[in-house]
Image (cartoon, rainbow, N blue to C red; front, side, top):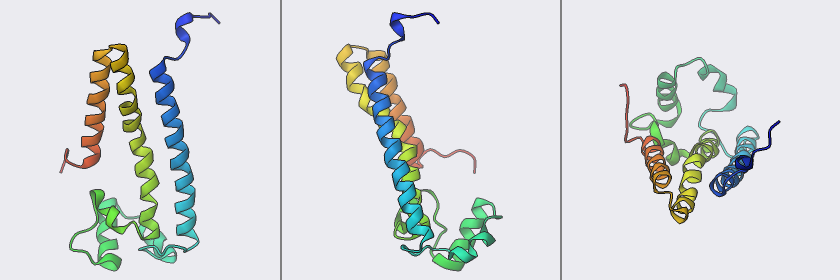
Amino acid sequence: MQNNKNSAASEEQLLYAAWLEKGMLIGLVLIVISFALYVFGIITPVIPLDELANYWKLPVKEYLAAVNNNFLHLDHPPTGWAWLKLIGKGDFLNFLPIAILSGITMLCYAVIVPVFKKKGEKAYMIMAIVEVVILALAASGLLKAGH
């Protein structure tokens, strides 16, 4: 194996990796905690566990409509970020660590922007900012594709 001086990780790579590791660990711990709260009934779910298997076969749109009709009775099924209103329910609390894990990449890009600025790497800095903006727009639900 050839030893290359350029094979060492850069400051921004190490910073990105450190934040990614912390975010992943936080997300993992929260998944375990929220799942335990859900499974052991410490936080009441929207769908009782003994009825959950009846809904697994449904496509997402039908699942959301059925859950809304049978349990939630909202004006509209909870789509997009509407799950946040239901975070007090065990089955919806599980979405929080998933959202954290999904958003950690955006945070990692944001924390390396100052490093690129300090190094005078304007192109990389702009690319990291654009990446954060694109990921934030995608997560916001403002950008829609399909129907």
